[in-house]
Image (tube, rainbow, N blue to C red):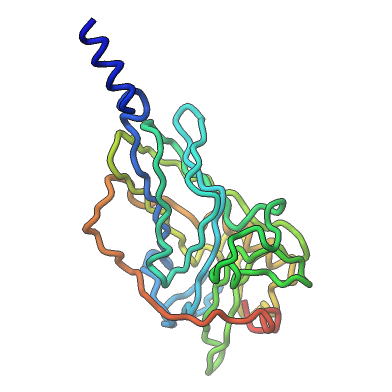
Length: 267
């Protein structure tokens, strides 16, 4: 009887069942280019089309982030998340989850078409700056990647802007297999975006062949399809509070304007 009373008291304090094993899962979004860490504004990368390029801006939105247990139950982590590759404070998504074995991480790259409406996200600068022009359908960009590539004896700009072009839905779902057992404590899942994969498979994407992109359904479809190989899981394990953000580079960026987004400028 005494043991039963102690057990009941422990449950009342929240130390019984899943609550006893609840832990924090931190999902970190990292970036590489062909296995090398992403650097700002350096023309040091080469894609499958042979374009030598560098990146000056990379920002995107992921939504409906969730873990899936080995038994198939989904546990939501966040409705949406903004990531700027050159602002370390945007790197992580953290959430408390029940103790369990988790077998997959899911998210949507961009925002599902039914949800992607102007004003659907909080009215703060980084979401407002991701607005897709109203004359082109409204809603929000999925991604704004910009930079320079070598062309002849000079350099040209490329713009890889993805979003709901003409009201179409070019977002896509990402499902990444993991093996994570949460039993209290803090845990970390490192997700890696390889930028070169946007321009590789199944279609080679050449910056020199692309003019305006935001109203180009073919370009949007190509990038959506290529996006299926962009993300992978890196390391998984206990969260290390002392770890540094290797490869993360803080850069001040201007908000930019949509007025010239659909002008011929490469990708």
